[in-house]
Length: 433
Image 1: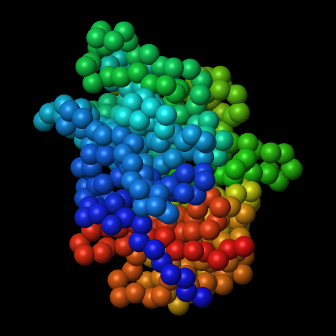
Image 2: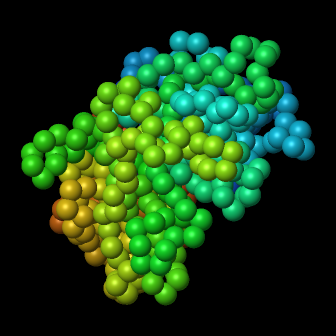
């Protein structure tokens, strides 16, 4: 069943969608940035477009040599927009980089006014609740109270770039972090933040082969709208799954899935474990007491082990939190859609396609389908039978794999195509009833 796809943006610019949370809650607006492409962070504005009228509105415009991009939107009304903000007044020593960027939020009622998500403190003594570097892909939790993101560390990068390992961090509504009185900070690049932020993953530069140690934590996702149910029937309200790079016994990097259960009470995030929450001059910030990552998948013995990195995708759970979706090759080497339980770690191959899945994916609101690109078409995959439903005709060039996002009301899928040299936003009806 093919539906008539609709081109939403028509102007001669590149339009970039993030992989999740790009729809406003009424399913009428899509948020985007205008980077030349997903690998070049030189966009100047955050914008939104109405899918019916094609009206475009600017949400935020960067100033003083800064760049912005990778926007997501909360499910509130009026909404808030979270995105990456590069440094203002960059110079040769401080310019946009993984460890030199911050997350900001703009309220729909006050466009062009950005509030920092995290604080940054890069001079000792470091400050618990502040981070020390750069954050990326800021995703609101289902209740919009907190955000998750990946994190790189300036202090460790200055110490030794090999020690600046990518990790997962979160922002929680505990209290505002004031690094110092304005104008009297120890470093002019430091700033205050509106959330209390902590790193929740643990990495090591050289994981022990065959162990659960990882050298990199990335592509995280909140589990469930309200967490997940443990084996004993109790509810785990807050949890995040992420991909971690392990080392196999033969020395190869194998990407596996990990989970972190998180406390409910905000004050528990301020209790240090063995190592300081704020980090030291020679060590990364550490997770608070009781926060410990747990490995879910063990795929080293598969013909094609590990979660795939191409296409790039993010772990996304079903709305009820009972299943975490990911992409991995089957025994024939075809990239398929899989599920894993956050409780048992039992994996289930869902799709059995003759073609590789070519993109990131998203769930519908009830966990009945996921949407992705396959065989150069936008497709729905029915859960759990794995039936593929082709929504767009097969094209010579596939839609771009960066984002394939179902609207909150399940009516449309938003995605990107290259048209006459520009990335344009498209939508297609899902037919979901």
